[in-house]
Amino acid sequence: MTDEPTIGFLGCGKMATALAGGLVSRGFAPADRVFGTARSPGSREAFSASTGGAHTFDASDGGNAELATTVDVLVLAVKPYQIRETLEASRGKRKSGSLIVSVAAGVTIETLEAAAGAEARVVRVMPNTPSLVGAGAAGFTRGTHATDADAALVRAMLECVGVAEEVSEPLLNAVTAVSGSGPAYGFLFLEALADAGVRAGLPREQSQRLAAATLRGAAAMVEETGDHPAVLKDRVCSSGGTTIAAVAALEEHGLRRAVHAAVAAAAARSKEMANE
Ligand SMILES: NC(=O)C1=CN([C@@H]2O[C@H](COP(=O)(O)OP(=O)(O)OC[C@H]3O[C@@H](n4cnc5c(N)ncnc54)[C@H](O)[C@@H]3O)[C@@H](O)[C@H]2O)C=CC1
Ligand SMILES: O=C(O)[C@@H]1CCC=N1
Image 1 (cartoon, protein in one colour):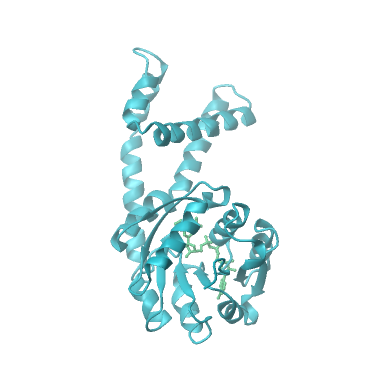
Image 2: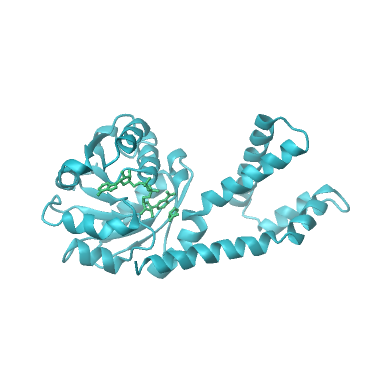
């Protein structure tokens, strides 16, 4: 493999478009070394636009085989139920020495290695869509034959677009539940906060800007000070003031219980998908 590998996204839908877009805009790979395949023309156009012109192949017209013969890193980004068949179909067509990276929720290393063929080098990743703007959070685990160099390459890719944590495979279900699915929880909370601001009298755009900047600020405080979130929360809560009244309302309405239930549901679903 050269210093600058070619990267191909087999299934260039929403996750691939976010990851590839982030990788190109952050300089990990130029657009002419990034490729995608999809059945849907809309997905191919969005992928091309997000990457500043990466080439795409039509998956309905032999594109997956063309992609497999072309790239050094083959990123599997079709739906989980399609991973086995598309990987089996790539056997004997993949570029010599290529690395297989799967981003599919729930699809195990064992399934990937069985479908890819003997000695295939596989890394399983759980990324998230904020990779597009360099604010991703991902977990990864290496397969039986993946080398230290493979793990380092995948880590470098993921760190180019955010943070990356190597974990044991069973913990990928928890990673999926916290950070893979997590942006949706953040968007839901942000939407609710902005709505509530509108209810309290703010114009919609101002409320959304304030809500988004506030959540970004809270996350940055945790990351940059290293303080426990509870300590930072206590500093906002004046005695007898507005914040503690709001915190009490959130506790009464079961915010913590709701978050625990959400993450447990996503982790259970991820585990279940391994058997589908
Ligand atoms: N959307 C997200 O936030 C995340 C998704 N993932 C994983 O990424 C994978 C893709 O999910 P999304 O991007 O959300 O779905 P998506 O539906 O947006 O993308 C799937 C793409 O595969 C294409 N496709 C369908 N059949 C194909 C075939 N035979 N060959 C090649 N391409 C084909 C479709 O045209 C579509 O563009 C899933 O396995 C999911 O678990 C992982 C982390 C986060
Ligand atoms: O909802 C899903 O199954 C995928 C995996 C993590 C985020 N989206």
